[in-house]
Length: 284
Image (cartoon, rainbow, N blue to C red; front, side, top):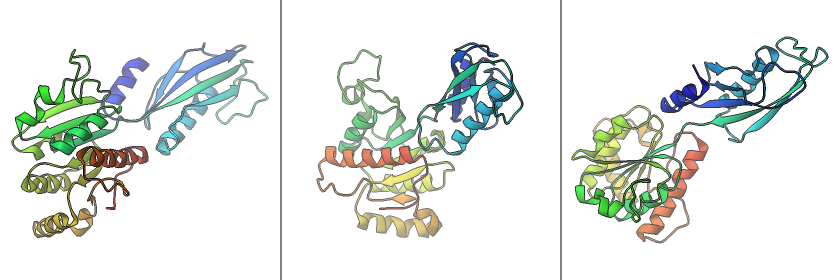
């Protein structure tokens, strides 16, 4: 399979990978500059020259994958192809020196906002400027009207929260909003802020029962959560699962209740979760 096709398939299946490129060659080497290989946890596509050269690149790429891209920065790997060079996977005596660029290709983060009221709209405005997959869900058609949201990038619309979107945006109007949960990518961060506490509760309960959700954030007061908590326990949700719900959502230290300020707080917390690349396990 061509490395371009392989990379596209891995991204479509939300599989992290490392792109290995022969960046510089001095002297003789098995491949010329520009040769590429795509490495996932259990497969590799393309070749950068075989032998110790390729196996060393594979090993380092899989170390990066195992670390979860903690640094998320490309790195250079230089190997000398000589019988005098230290080699872990056999001797290559081409006589040259090869520098390879290893570029992490992480999974694109996914965020779903349930409820496009005042706060949800401001939050969509901020998150749409991030390189993520953004799903916007509301039971009310008027909240998702193009004249309110604007149109996604490339549509020709010049105004609205989505008019300059960097994110891949999906807008869904559903009478039963929690139905959208089944279609979210694995690891999606779910933010619940609808106009109706009954809807909020239904979405939270469904999110807790949906495999693969990365984190669940609920807008509202502590007293609202106390009521929800009692109802969820009565519905058979386990105590440990309730700890997956973070409420009130957002970062500490922002007292304003203006929709734009709340949206900034929530967006900041989402970006923390995205950079951590792990599911949220505790409420603040």
